[in-house]
Amino acid sequence: MTETTTYSRVAVSDAAAGLLRELTATHGKLMFHQSGGCCDGSAPMCYPVGMFLTGPSDVHLGSLEVGLDDPIEVYISEAQFEYWKYTHITIDAVPGRGAGFSVEGPTGKRFIIRSRMLTEPELEAFGLGPESTA
Image (cartoon, rainbow, N blue to C red; front, side, top):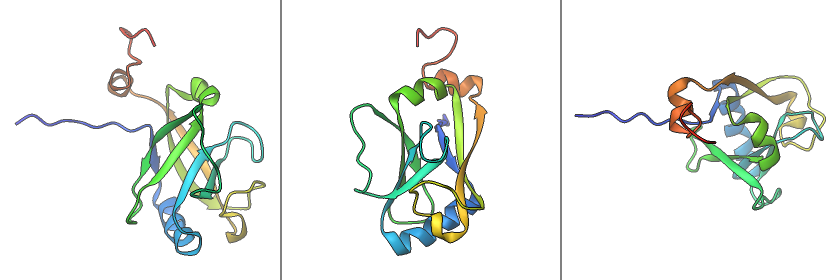
């Protein structure tokens, strides 16, 4: 039997998953858009679905499974993705207050990004390996 490995560009910490479950109970289904520098630097911005509209220049990074019926989708602008395409991000939550419009603002916690470079197998899976023209 052959085992298939699935790679993702985005993950969520336990702290962020817990906060997302709490926020979903208050705000309904949520989504993230990775900020490109406005509002809160490069913080991940969390919105109720429908409050922030993605467009054709947004890239879907992946889905976060946090123990809800529906996964939480994560997007980034195409221009920002060009800078981050070799990076795996983990959305985390820490004490503090962000300066943006993200829904966690009043909770005394804020979402942050922890990042690392993609591994060789991940690069190959995403078509970014040494033999790729990407």
